[in-house]
Image (tube, rainbow, N blue to C red; front, side, top):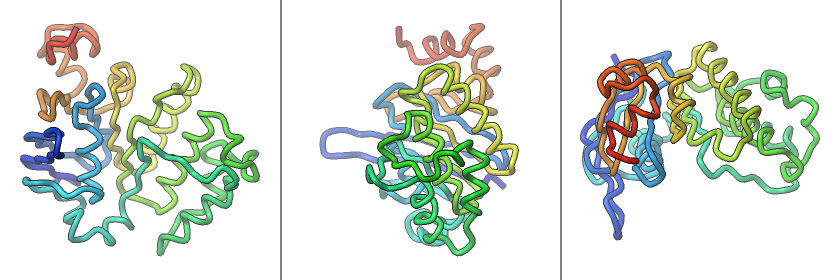
Length: 236
């Protein structure tokens, strides 16, 4: 059985329809990519999946749970790094991890996460003094502190320099290798091609294609995912 199943999801706001008819499933142990440009409906989709927004229609099952009705139970099993992840400027790294650990019945060891994410030497640093890459590594640590079965990572590498992006990619692969299913929201084609086992291409709130990176390139008759995306969406 899929670990996540989304069927005919629709979500609108007063000024626009964000998600029109989105369906996909995620298998346990994969890195599943949700790929699209800004405003395509990616973040709204995963916010509905996490129970942060209520869909207008459609159905969502995550680990056999309804994200809205079973939100507390899902919170124990799903971790998320949100697109906008800011913390108080004078909160220390170690304090943030201990605070988030207190939200869970069976949290991970904060010290082990600090070591895993190369943040041990920053444990007493204030959030405001972290670099962009360090803030992203901390956001991953906070997403993993509850020992989740699924981690949702939304535009994780936006704003990072090329070296920090490559480091983040290795971390994402390490998360998957540890047994956590990853849902990766991104608009970077090279990132999706490198990391994802399967990809849902979303444009204007609809899934245009769903396949492996190689399958998407084959369908579009292109040699890179970037070119395949242009062909599939009609964007220049």
